[in-house]
Image: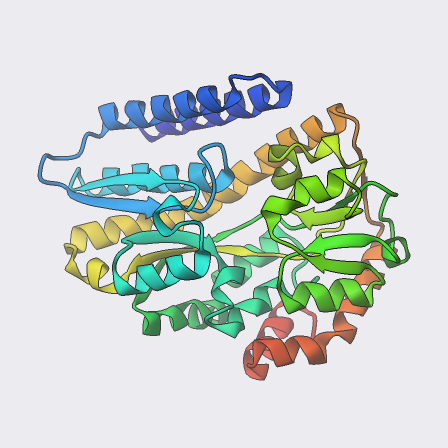
Amino acid sequence: MKKNVLATMMAGIMVCMSLAACGGSGTAATTTAAAAAGAESSAEQAAPAANATKITISVPDPEASYIYAAATEFANRAMEYSNGTLDISISGNGSLYGGDTAAGIKQLGAGSLQMLILASSVYASFEPGFNVISVPYMFDDQKQLLEYLNSETADELFNRVNSMGINVVGKWTRSFREVTNSKRAITSPEDLKGLVLRVPNNSLYVEFFTACGAVTTPMNFSEVYNALQLNTLDGQENPVDVPYSNKFYEVQKYISFTNHMADAWVVGINGKFFDSLTQEQKDAIMKAGEEVQQWNVDMMAEQDQVALKTLTDNGMEANELSDEAKQQFIDISRSCYPKFKELIKDDALFDATAKFTGRE
């Protein structure tokens, strides 16, 4: 049964991305239809009982996004493992918390949201320790990031949200962040000098890119496309699926695989609600959260290639860093460690993480 569910989901994702690449006017409707078809197929194979416990998972992105796909896979597995005693649905676009991620975390802790999947970098506003995951060049690759998320150091970090009334039932990776711009390929820190680069409103980003010589401009993401189009910005940085899904190939020429920052997804559930579930339901949720961790890695790797092909097919030029250039970026990041430690406010956590990744 699970293979059929996976096949249905991946086919739906591929169809959505292919249509989006064509720029057809029916993309949004087709995306919705594909997601609905996948949900119906899963429901037919593992229909929940009439008295099943209903759970809604809120995610920040739309149905065509990676995290919506991962949340759907999680829901399918949890429902199956619960023997039909759970009935789980997904709500996208942050609609249940008005798109305000800080409000979403507060609502999850208070119980007005049952489950919420958000980036660990967002949780840093409440627990500064989460910034350690996004320290530039702290992690070599997805494999190392995944190993870290499953370490005792990460367990201690993620469990800090328990004091907020939140239990973590999944720790999933995200694709690393890359730089796009309209001026030149980024082959070394020298190429960033003078570039006007949009970054999130987070001091980690500002400190690092300023140290690289870029002119950093914190800006709401909703404003980025227009700013790139008007040349108010030269570039931005995000995982590859972001310039793909937002058609930045219309306003950007270069994508450089700098892989400069990591991030993770926190799969959270309200603590009191989790405690109210049966042991079978708790076990089902925990098992699904653990299994989807690797499923998500595999899915992202495949879909990142789809996204990159779309960008290059639409005229963008892609490049990777040499080992020498990567080391130059690592050295700049290390020069910022004193400031990063001030932001994280936990030297022991920082040092333990750096030791784990060989960055001490």
